Amino acid sequence: MAPPPPPVAPQPVGSIPAQIVDAGDTVAVDVAAYFRDPDGGALTYEASSSNAAVVSVSQSGSTLTLAGVAEGTATVTVTATDPDNLSAIQELGVTVSRPPATNLTNHSAHDLRPTWSPDGARIAFASSRDDNYEIYAMNADGSGVTKLTNHSADDESPAWSPDGARIAFSSSRDDGRGEIYAMNADGSGATRLTNHSAFDGVPAWSPDGARIAFVSTRDGNAEIYAMNADGSGVMRLTNHSAPDLGPAWSPDGTRIAFASRRDGNTEIYVMNADGSRVTRLTDYHARGPAWSPDGARIAVSSPLHGDYEIYVMNADRSGVTRLTEHSAFDGLPAWSPDGTRIAFTSDRDGNDEIYVLYVPAR
Image 1: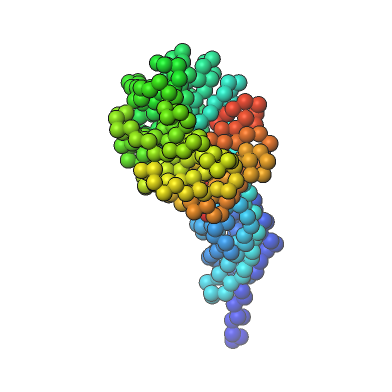
Image 2: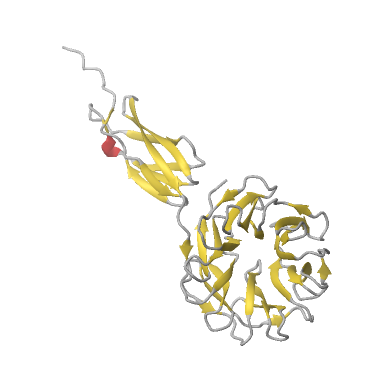
C-alpha cells in the first residue's frame, strides 16, 4: 500500500488589494479568498502591522480590521496556516490619510469659539445668527443646536465647567464693556461674576472647577487674572506692558498657557498657576493655546507657513505638527475630552464656522 502523499502548504491566490483608510477610521478586509489549502484543510489567520503607530490590525476569523492611527504608510503581513502547521504569507500596503475637517455649523452668520462639554457630547459656541452674539450649544456632530442666552447685548467666549454643570462666558449686557458671567448648562441662572469698569472676558475654568482665569484691562492693558468660581478672590497673574491674552489651564491645574506680545510678536508662553516662572514656548507668531487632555500637547493657531492654521506641539515646545492647510483663517482650537479631535473656528466657507478635525496620535 502506497504511503499517503505529504501535506502541501497553503498557497496565495492573487494579491490582497492595498487599502486606504482615514486616520481615526477603520476598514474591514476578508482575506479568505486570497489563500487556498490544496489539502482542503481549514485555514487560520494571523496578521501584524509593520508600524502600529500608523495602522493597527485586529481580526476575527479571516476578517481583518485595519484602524488608521496616524497619517502615513504601513505594511500588514497576513499568515494563513493549515492543520499541518504549514503556512503561506501575503502582504498588503495600507495608506492612512488625514481626513478633511468637518463643518459642524453651516450658517450665514458667524459661529466661533467652540468649547466641549466634559463628556464630549456637546459643543458650546458663540454665534451672531440672531443679529447679535449669543451662546449656543449643539451635539458634537453639529445637530441639535440650542440657544442658551437671549439678550440684546453680545454674549461671547463660552467655557464649559469641568463638571459640565455650568458655562462661563463674557457679556456686555450690564456695562457695555464686558464682564464674566456663569450660567447653568441649559442657559438658566446666569450670574455676574466680575464687576469692573474695565473689560473682563475670555474665561477659562481650572480643571477642578474652583478657579476661573480671564483677561482684563483693569490695569491699563490686557493681563491674565484668576478668581474663585464665585467671582471672589481676584488675583492678577501677569504684569507686563504688552497684552497677555487667551489663558488656558493645564489639565493638572499647575500651569496656564497664554499668548503675549511681550517680545514684540504674539507668542505662546506658559506660567505657573500663581503667575510665577513665565516661560516662552514658541519662537514664531502663535495664539489661542489649548492643552490636550493628557497635558502632553498644546494646540495653537499660527501663520507659521503663511495663513493661520492649527498646529499641535509637545508641551515642551518640540514636535510641531501642522493639522490644517487652507488659505482661510483656522484658529481658536479646543480639544475634545478624549483627545482625538479638535474643534476650531474657520472662515473657509466665507464666514466663521465651527469645524472639527481628527488629531493624529503621537
